[in-house]
Length: 502
Ligand code: NAD
Image 1 (cartoon, rainbow, N blue to C red):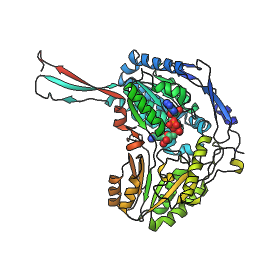
Image 2 (cartoon, helix red, strand yellow):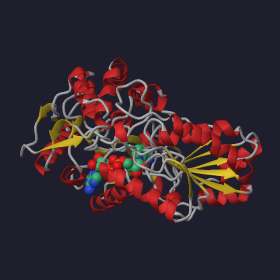
Image 3 (cartoon, rainbow, N blue to C red):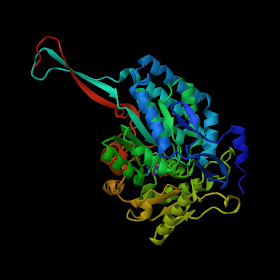
Image 4 (cartoon, helix red, strand yellow):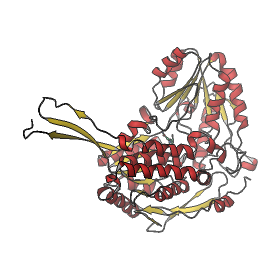
């Protein structure tokens, strides 16, 4: 039995959740609540309200008022920057508390919080990065097309009310990647966190409020996709939908955007490849590839490189190291510093991962290690042993489906052309890594791979670099100029400087 999570709830001072609407913290109008079973133990940690259509309507109207009449869209750049930098400072100051709340939410171990891209320090950097854009959201001055005495200007204006929906796997980071650009552009927001990770996001919202954001600029409605998410994405007063999550829900968001002619950004899933050539540092490539699929979030990561395309000459060396890494994963209570990886988020996901593993075996893939639910002391949680398959072909479901669990599939290749063809033979296109010591090969591969981010001999998220997907991995980007501009409308102004124009 993994030690109970409940004492940590008391240490962190976790209270039952409330909705944040127009600057007030309140329960749902119909009093309904949701309690999520903790993934490591099955315990019910605390309840939060299920926002119904009336609550969502109140939140959207509060955001609408704050946009149409409130100070935030009209604030001086210096004021917006000051508040956003204060948010970053508060996130840094409360980093340990946010990590503890995340562990209560989704059981991501505290030890993983020191990994940069999943740490509160990175979340703070996301706010700092976007604060830097506030006074740089410039339009252009164009020469009049047919000459004449007027100027043609373009202005970047905030898009309006943003409906943001985020998943559970990196809850505060993924919420920040929507809140920060929306705030920097002068928008107002209604955010719906995942029903499987709510408390860390509610605390982030309270810190944002403490930083001095005017009431109604950020509103938070909690609850599952139906009724809460559905009411938000279909609300006629929302101008833009910004979503991170699965392809299936992303499709619904796109339909809702089409129905209401809303702007839309989508960050969806992936089935990303790591290409390991014979001239690479194979041991490092194997350790990092297996590590990113099994440690920390246990492969519940959109950009996890779950297809290892390995040159035939080094496949045995790769498998030997990857198996050792799989054996080093330590499961248990996320508050235990020795624990290095999370359970799967819920029993539905547990069944799905075990089902895909069984399909891989039935299709002829060879199981090197793992492949089963963890038993004994871990039987009360949703733990699956780190799993490594080899002799996988790219048509098997384990090579095509986003498994979202600790499962790495090794697919052998013979030359560059074959590696590239397998890498691109997917409906997704989120990320990839190329492992080689040959710079020219690295350049050939990075140019040929159809994915939003390609790492060479490693992979690192950067808060100021665009992140997003080709093909069914999404629409639009987060981070950098492309992201912030997607929270703006472009207005053209024709400005005469004589009495006659055109
Ligand atoms: P999910 O799509 O099941 O849920 C995401 C969010 O959508 C949750 O808040 C959920 O409540 C909400 N939702 C569900 N049904 C809805 C509906 N009908 N209307 C409105 N909202 C609805 O995804 P998940 O299981 O929480 O997260 C895992 C997925 O997220 C994976 O596919 C992963 O690849 C993806 N993801 C992508 C990125 C990225 O940046 N590309 C980052 C993290 C996770």
